[in-house]
Structure formats: C-alpha cells, structure tokens
Length: 246
Image (cartoon, rainbow, N blue to C red; front, side, top):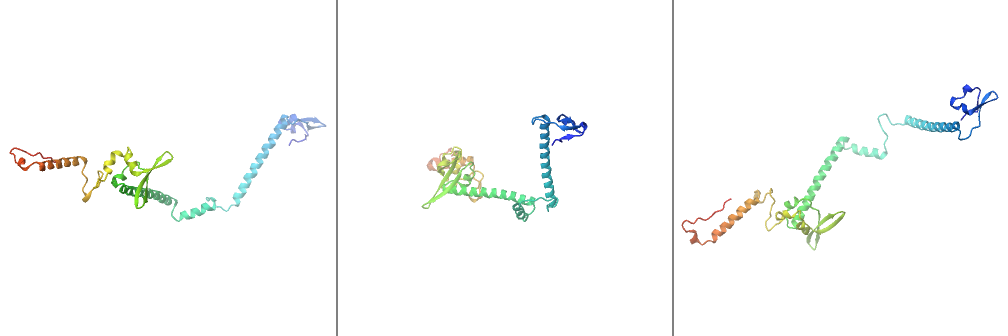
C-alpha cells in the first residue's frame, strides 16, 4: 500500500513522487484515479508480492515435511503395493537375475508355442492324408481347428480376411491356394509316404532326388520291355539289348 504522507520529498520513492503533493509542511498522497499509472503499478506490485509469498509458504511447508520424514537419505518412499511387489521379486534374485529369467522364460515360451503349433499341424496333416513333415514346412498356413462328429474328424481352416475370420474346409483351402499348389506333389500320400528332400525314409536311407527317380523309372520301363520280347528274338545274333543305368 502507498503511504499517506512523507515528511520530505526526498523520502518519497522516485517512481512514486508524482502521486504526492506538498500540503501543510508534508508531502501527502494525492487523490488519484483508479487507472492512474501509479495506482496500476502499485496493484501489480501487490499481486506479485502475494504470489511470491504463497510460493515461499509452499516451499517452507515442503521443507518442514522433509525434515520430519523418517525416510533416510538415499531412499525413496513408495506405495505399499510397490513395496509388496518388490519383496516378492527379491525372493527370485537380484534385478538383473530376474530380468534374465524373464527373458529366458519368453524364449522358452516361444519354443514351446512353436512346437505346439508344429504338433498341431502334423495332426491336421494326418487327418487330411498329407505328409506331416512336408506340411509343417509350408509357410503362411492359417490356424486350423479339428472338429469331431459321429466319430469322424474334420479340419477347418480359419482364414483371416482383413478383420474377418472366414472358415473353410482345410483341404479346400490347401489345394486351392496358389502359394501351396507347387508343393502339393510332396504333400500327397498315395499308399506310401512321400518325403520332402532332406528327410529320411525307411531304414534311415536318404530319399532319392527327382533325377534319380526319373532314371530308375526309365530303367524299370526298359526292363519291362525286355521281358515282353519273345525269347527267340533275344537270341538273334548281333542284337544288343539297350540298358539304362543310373
């Protein structure tokens, strides 16, 4: 607040001298309008002082609370739920050890999930009469569901189209897929199991590649032709029966 009077002009702050007039040997506060610069400036100063005091009181309250706290230096106060969780976690080792265990668990879960998926695909392949190991190696297969009714098992392919899941008979999906079509010969099981290249068949012998199978087929055809020739023609001098070897 502005003082109502000063004894001398020198006592009046320089920026407020315009608000005082000399009267009766003193300098008294003149009647100023509410929008006078001096009055406006005085209001601003009072507002700033009030704000500064409130902030100082708040800081003092925080300081007093900190002095009265029982939390030692180097420690922090936490919620009881967090403290309870920490106690449970500490039983499993240090922070680094717990993180390592969680990472290992995540890896093991991924391996377990993959194996479970492959086992499920093998079961689907058996129901559909496909070669299981070849079927497992196909990429981009959807989720399958095995359903059983009246003792008969059927397989449904759950194909995702956008946000929608469309159910189709699994065999219809597999044999109608352009991505899978080139591999269908390796999937078919015709009485004997057809294995993909790189796997082993009976007695642990490696499967024959496509060229070996072609040569064997040609050899068998030639053998059959020789058997069909009448014995008397086989004895014709100078006749040499062509043989096909591998």
